[in-house]
Structures are given as structure tokens and as C-alpha cells.
View 1 (cartoon, rainbow, N blue to C red):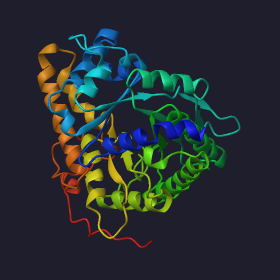
View 2: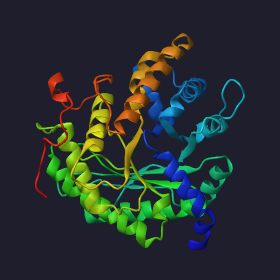
View 3: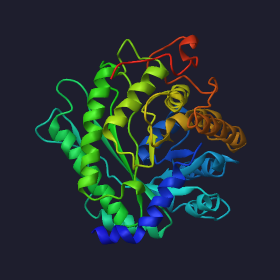
Length: 370
């Protein structure tokens, strides 16, 4: 239904452009009830609806976050919740110039005949759900797909399934007024090196891109949320931010058309500091084409320090909000190549490194042949 998309064409393009405006990115606050429960467990907070609502209110009302946060991805429960003032969360965000997004996928299932590779569910009834969230004020959506590396993975069955499903979801979203965030995530499990991640990412991204074109998506009204090109969690050589940046941008330049307005990276288990440094290094690269905005759509990499500061206490809300603002400002700076480093938590870094390995260096130092 190309005609349905055309009814929203101008709005889709404007929304996508707004979300990836210079120095701005996305707060991913779409954790499911189970996932947020795991986050709360780490700070000894009970996983109740009241606590989930209170935590999301802390995030959404934090002073000045609109300076660096242009969009917030929400879980279905959160869309219908309100602040203590009585104002619905979607309305609250939009009053601050922040677009509200919605997680639309319905989780993962095993693809038969593969090595436990996964497909994402949720296409059934998606048009009606997308239309209902548009009516509630949401203007973009997210759908996550995951792929494994190693032991013959990803199989082409998995790659093609991921590409087809992401493109179908994207098309249905645009038919109903939502900017689709296309999220093919290469998992970090395993010992693969940067070059192997780059090879697999290029294969997946170009296959997804072709499916998006085949499905007739309005590319200018679409955003991509990929993994950065990083080594596997157990690889001895994790690579510098400059090396990660170069491989990531090269991979995108080989697979993603310039018409796409923005790439909003997932943090993928990186520490707050690593996610900021890697994004910053991408935006400092010279002598390589990067026609898209390169910015962030972070969950843990924006919220880890916030949760630690909050600890479920109303007395800690101001401190927690200050932590969120600090991370938002850090990543806003990184999206412009201006982050100086040193403000983020390094606790979740996959491979321990010394402080000197995180220092920023001239982006031209690392060079690799095509």
C-alpha cells in the first residue's frame, strides 16, 4: 500500500530528521516488565507497576534532557501511564519537544532447522497496533531482531528471515504514520574479532537494506539501529574506539544508502563510557564517507548510573536525574565528535582495559586498507 505511506510521507521524513538532529539521540526506555525487573533487582527495588511508573517519571521529567534527547522508546504499559501531575507520559514528552516511540515486536522464537537462531514475532495484527499507538501520540517505533556469530551462524535462513521481517514491519509502520527503527543486532556472544563482525554485519545490513527497498519503504522516513562493529565478548583484542569506529563506518558505507537520514546505534552491553567513546570516534573520522547522522539509541548506556543513583528512593530523584542529564550531554557531544571522555561508568565493559586505553586520540591515527 504505497498510497497509504504517501499520506504520511512529509510527516515521516520530518520526524526522522528531527530525531537525528545534531547533538541529539534516543533514550531507549522500552524494557519489558521482566527486563526492568532484572535492572531493579540489581538495586534491590521491587518490580511493581508503581515503581516502574515512578522510575519512568524520573526519566521523562529530568530537567534539560530535551537538549540532547529527541525521542524516547516506550514499552506498551508506559504509553498509558501518567506522571503524578496527571499528565500522560506521551503528552509530557511531546510538550518538551521529545517524540514518543513504541516497541512493537513481540519477542523471539527459534527458527526451525537452525542452530537455535531466532526470528522476531509480531507481524500479525501489527497494522492495527501501529494505528492505535499513532492515535495515542507515538510517532516512531522499534522492532529488534538478533543474529548470532560463530559455528556457521548466521545462516542465510536467519539473515533472510531477519531482513524480510524487518522490512515488512517497516512498511506496515509507515502505512500507519510511524517512523520505523530497523534494528538488526549482531550479538556480541563469542570470541570473533572485529574483522569477522564487520564481515557478518555487512552481509546482514546490505540484505536488510535490499529488503527495505524491495518493500517500498520511504527511506528518508526510516532510521537504522544497528550494532557497532565490535569484537566478541571473549575476544582478547577488543580494539580501540578509533578502530571500532572505522570498521563500523566502513561497513555502513558499503551497505546503507545515503538517503537514510540517521543511524541510531544500540549500545549492546557496552559500558556507558565505551558507548560514548566509540560514537565520538565515529563522528571524528576523516577521509571516509558518512552521509547519515551517526547518533545513539541507548538503554543501559544512558541508564546504568541513573539506576545506581536512584535506588528506588524519592530522596534520590534529583541525583538520578542529574546522572541522566550528564549521560545525555556526553552522548550529545559524542554525536558531534566533541566528547572529551571520562564521565561515564565503565563497570559493564566487556573486557577490562586500563585507563590509558580509553584516552581519545587523533582520529587519523588508525588507518586500514579497504
